[in-house]
Length: 59
Image 1 (cartoon, helix red, strand yellow):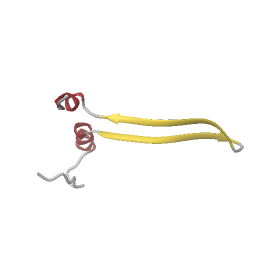
Image 2 (tube, helix red, strand yellow):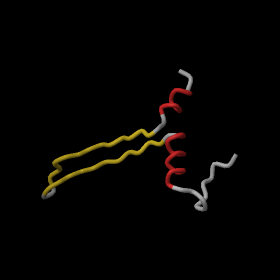
Image 3 (cartoon, one colour):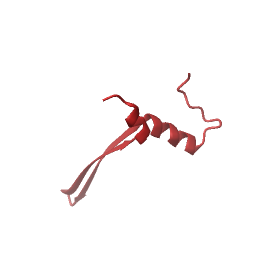
Image 4 (cartoon, rainbow, N blue to C red):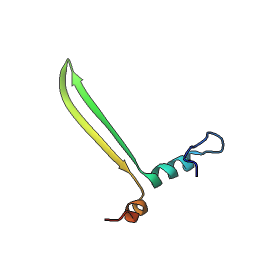
């Protein structure tokens, strides 16, 4: 079975379905500063996975 996704015949729904079924982690940092003074720093982490995929894993 090939895990390669081609551009032909692939829709956004298919891509999102694949990401949700296998899982994805997105992380990022946001820094808001004013006049060289750091005011707000956000460390963001997002786990995107289907509940059914998590339940399949043995504990």
